[in-house]
Each structure stands twice: as C-alpha cells, then as structure tokens.
Length: 74
Image 1 (cartoon, rainbow, N blue to C red):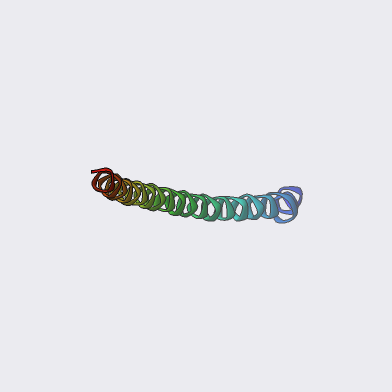
Image 2 (cartoon, helix red, strand yellow):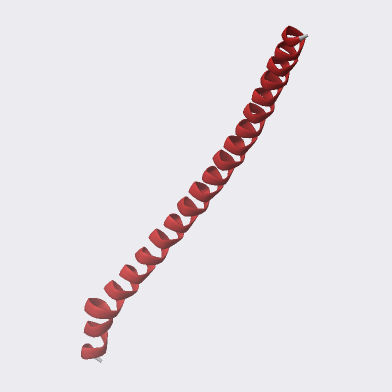
C-alpha cells in the first residue's frame, strides 16, 4: 500500500492538478476569444454603417453638383 500511496502523492495528484490548471486556463482563453470575436463583429458592423453613410452623403453632394452644373448650362 505504500507504493500506491506514493504513486498517488507524487504522480497522480500533481498530474490531476496540472490537468485542472490547463482546463481553467483553456476556459479563460475561450472566453477571451469570444469577446474578441464580438468586438471585431461590432467594429465591422459600425464600419460598414459608416461607409454606407459616407456613400450616401457623397451621392447627395454629387447630385447637388449636377444640379448646379445643369443650372449653369441653362
């Protein structure tokens, strides 16, 4: 029984502790990755919306310039 206790004390317990530590760290990294993915998605959505707004404004400016050019040609 001494051998079994020694194995549990010096091999199995440290290995179990190491595996538990790896599991906790992996869960933390998974959470961090999901947060980063959400931030990237939000940034992409905001960028796309901003680009759409800029395109709309540019189109309005071009329309006004076309009207000005048309009125000058008359």
